Each structure stands twice: as C-alpha cells, then as structure tokens.
Length: 194
Image 1 (cartoon, helix red, strand yellow):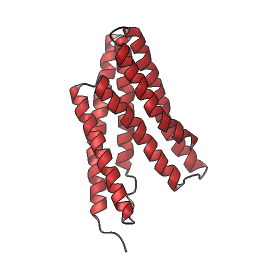
Image 2 (spheres, helix red, strand yellow; image 1 turned 90 degrees about the vertical axis):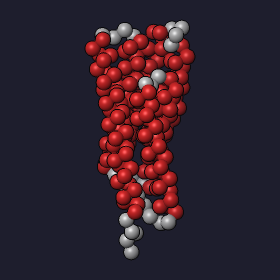
Image 3 (tube, helix red, strand yellow; image 1 turned 180 degrees about the vertical axis):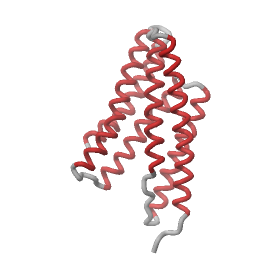
C-alpha cells in the first residue's frame, strides 16, 4: 500500500515539475533540462514501484480488493497527470493524438468497469492492458529523457534515438489501448454466467 500511495502522489509532483520546466524553458534552458531529467528519474522510480508493488503483493500473499483497486488508480493517476501536462507543455501534434486515444480509452473502460460492477459483474484485467501500460510508461520516460537531452546539449544521435523511441512507444501504447479496449468491450458483451 505504501508503494501505491507513493506512486499516486508522484503523478502530480512530476506534472508540477514539467510545468515548472516549461515556464523556465526560454529564460534558463539548462535549468529546464535538469528539471526534465529529474522528472524522468522520478517517473522511472514511480513506474518501477508498480512492478515491485505487484511482485511483493503476490510473493507475500498480500493481494486484496482494495489494494488492487488502489494500484489501478495509482497507475492511471501517474500516467494521466504526466500525459496531460506533457500535452500542454511539449508533445508534438502526433503524440497529442496518441495521448487522446490513450486517455479516452482509459475513461471509457473505467466507466465500463463501473457500470458492470453496479450489475454485479467484474471485468478482469487483460494482459494486453498490462503491455499497454508498460509501453506508455516506457514512452513517457523516453520523452522526458528526450526533452532533458535536447536541452542539455546531448549528442544528436542520443536525442534522435530518444525521439524515435518515445514516438514509437507512445504509439504502440495507443494501438494497444485500442486493442485492449476492444477486448474489454467484447468481454463485457458476453452474457453473464449463471
């Protein structure tokens, strides 16, 4: 639970750092670069707590319905906060489209889950959804690192590699979001077992 709460809190903290970087970008390029670098490091740490949290819960048989719900909320809060602020601060148009796909899918599936829960049905977590989350977290990390490296005068091949990685991973995340969303809709449309 402690790791989940840390991850839940990190979303707004990282989002605030990104906003700060965007406000000082034109007056102090190096400071903005360092802020993006710190944001990337914190995002990696927060993302890793998701894996450690799940591993520890399974290893110590500490899985609970509340813990699973909070874990899911913490993932969504972390990714949503950061993607929304990046959309405002620095994402290119094509990545804004990928972000809209990701966020719209998450809102839709959350509503679908809630609606099914009200009728006594559950929508189990889909493996594709886990890959989607991993791709998005890796893509956001690559984008934050790309921003940091661009502002801190890293070698051009590093900047280009991070640009390609972030774009590819975020679009993979968007495609997996659509695919997993369709799988959830298909599962929801199956008749409830008696």
